[in-house]
Image 1 (spheres, rainbow, N blue to C red):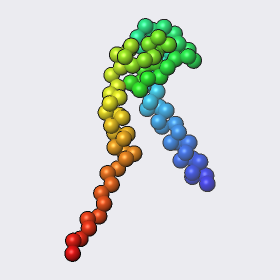
Image 2: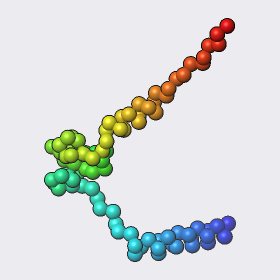
Image 3: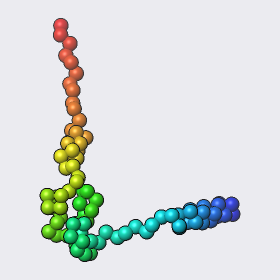
Image 4: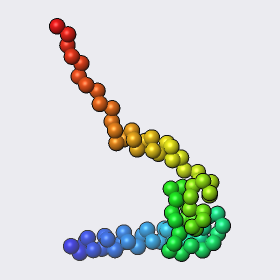
Length: 91
């Protein structure tokens, strides 16, 4: 058990030293992507990955880049597989 504790302690300290200087802290998404207005808890997450305020929450208003048609087609294709019946042998 002593070996495991030593191993976990060394694993925990090694990644922290590597990531400390290279990674930037992730920015909080609390502003509308279109008008940069603060949205706080009332922000709407879009499928394109951005946060929007109330007036800009609809995809046609903020010029959404997400392809809803392809997503819906893939969803239908996944949920409704093609069913092929067995062929009947003729006598």
